[in-house]
Length: 118
Image (cartoon, rainbow, N blue to C red; front, top):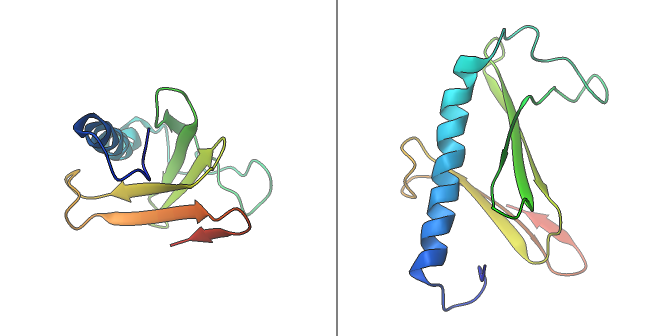
């Protein structure tokens, strides 16, 4: 996919939109399948890292994966985005209705020497 190319095709934009919309729907539906909020937050690597039982690949090649969990008692959402190879950057967006308007965007990019988050 040519994300940094100025000649984006409608197919590329549609694919990005569908991936983000699917991630949002899964984030909204997955809490209803949780067994219990108290048992779903057991640390895996240490006391500071929560257990992330929900996973979803964000692209057909499996290069990106989003993992998450929700703590209803703390009213917090824990998310982890894994990218196999970050060549230029990645943009993750979420909104109430799956639309780009008023969406919360997270941007991670690398200039070859240093990584940035915004």
